Image (tube, helix red, strand yellow):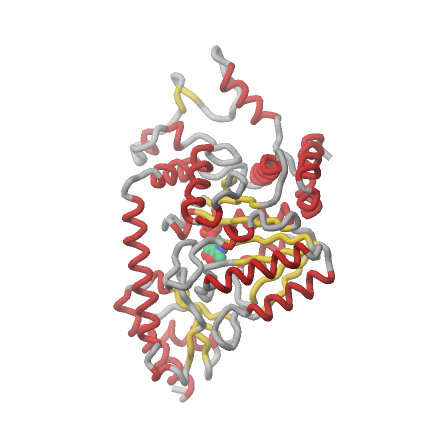
Length: 435
Ligand SMILES: Cc1ncc(COP(=O)(O)O)c(C=O)c1O
């Protein structure tokens, strides 16, 4: 094993041995290389005559560039747009994102969390998490309905075993009983358990109420304090888009960080959905734990080492643009305006679906947040209806499993909502009658 990995492992072992034990085999071997990166960092500071260390091109002391590229980004200098960003991410952006996290999650106050490490979107954050913490045959607990890409990352690439629970109980709330049963049963069989929480949820658009969030945290704390090393990973891609008053409007990370020495909370979030910059590809990984001296730096170094060995670093241009956006005085108003548009659409979907004419054909799963909602079809198959709606009416929706349709109301106008559900109903009737 590389001596730098050994050093990081020693730091982690002494700051919280449970966390060290939770690392995957790859996670234990990860380190942040000194090599070229640290030599060029050193040269940047001290090589005042000639600095010939880094693999970029310079001309007259400046970053070499084409006007045909830079003319299109007049607000940034080439050194802030074209050069490599550090594998950890831009230091100012990491700091700013962490500050924002404390503002958005008041429950975090007084807790120590790591600096966020920048990834190439949240997908890359999930996959870095997986590489660092998931071994083949590890169990990951997730609801039955979930973002499909988890399967690709956790099962196909990392050979973990997904164990599911039903997201909703019969009263239309978070299924605390089944969640507790599944988590406790799995915890009894092993000494390391991984639980993924994705709120607002893709595909249903559900987030827990304040009461449910507290109970979820309580269940997880209990299994950790009963002796099972518990890794809780939050996918907060749709964070902030909470439309109802009793919804818990913070990340579960705020409740879970630092809750028990055997519990590691890992927050995956990013600009993608929250700041409407899907193609920027800027995500973050942040840790919250009970950790002694140097522990967070060791985790950040392993995480940045994993980024380094995978994508090397995330787009400097996107990180610079995001940083400027976070510092722009217009941002709060812009966020409020877009939030209000999405919330009005969600409320319109609820209003329209209150009409009893739909209830024989389909019913909505509970939703209160995010970009999506799902319908449970009662009489026809989801895939058949999807194809029919597409071909007969030019309406595109996503079929999930045998009887669910996902609707991204985030990308339709409020005045199209009623028409959309009427066409779905028409499609169901047509299929039922064989037209
Ligand atoms: C739950 C969830 N996680 C992660 C992602 C991926 O986000 P990104 O585009 O930042 O990789 C998505 C995107 O659809 C998502 O729905």
